[in-house]
Length: 81
Image (cartoon, rainbow, N blue to C red; front, side, top):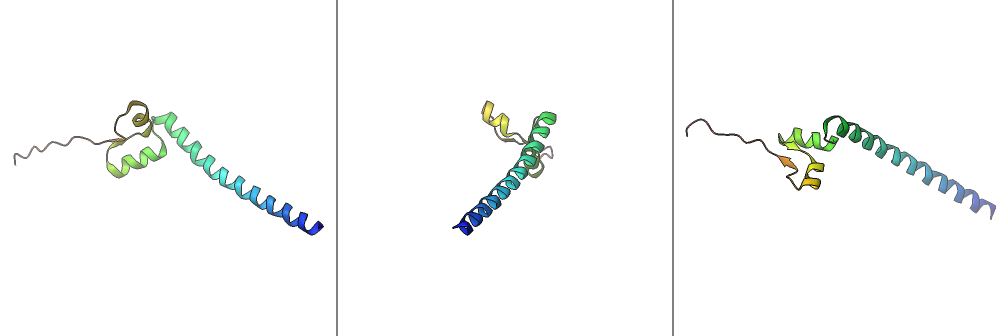
């Protein structure tokens, strides 16, 4: 019976360590996004989206104001064709 309690205690210790490590990874990502949002008004994901699409991506502006997530720049054709 004592062996069961030892194994059960080790199992819960391993689960607790894994959860703590998982939360720390999320905390780093959340902290980086919070610092980025405080400095530029955009999160880390918004900067990645802007770099990939070439537009101005902002998820917070979309959810608060109902605007588009990525506003694309208008390009005019001045070639005459």
